[in-house]
Image (cartoon, rainbow, N blue to C red; front, side, top):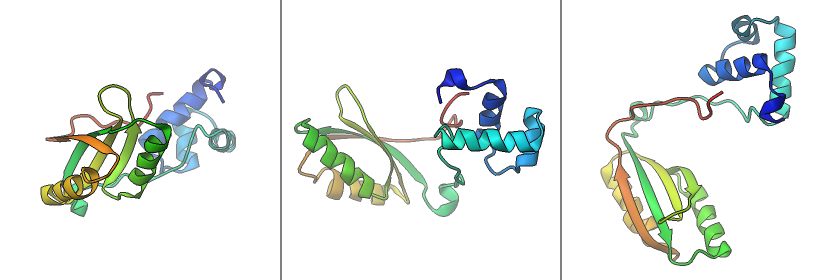
Length: 155
């Protein structure tokens, strides 16, 4: 399903679900101005087309003891396809890494990390990340405060 195939009601549905994915179908239908049965059909169509990938609870990291958010820019020694795939696979296995992006420019990967504290983050960077045989450079950025938080996609 391409964006061109989405009508104004589909866009409203996506906006509302991105704001609150837990609302009932009846509430969603009221918010977008249609009755519940066609609303449910539209949501299912969006799910089946992969436009809606899933639903999740957004957790408050600091209330769960994860007070530190940091970003790591990682440069590999060699950018062969095998090395890029190997590093990407490793990133999947590190719980501290919450998002990983292969990027262009001076670095090869951007990692968003969440840790309990600075010591646990430093241990990960020194003992795991920088110690990896494929890694050449690691630049870290500690966050101060999040100033904007929206859904992942503007609709």
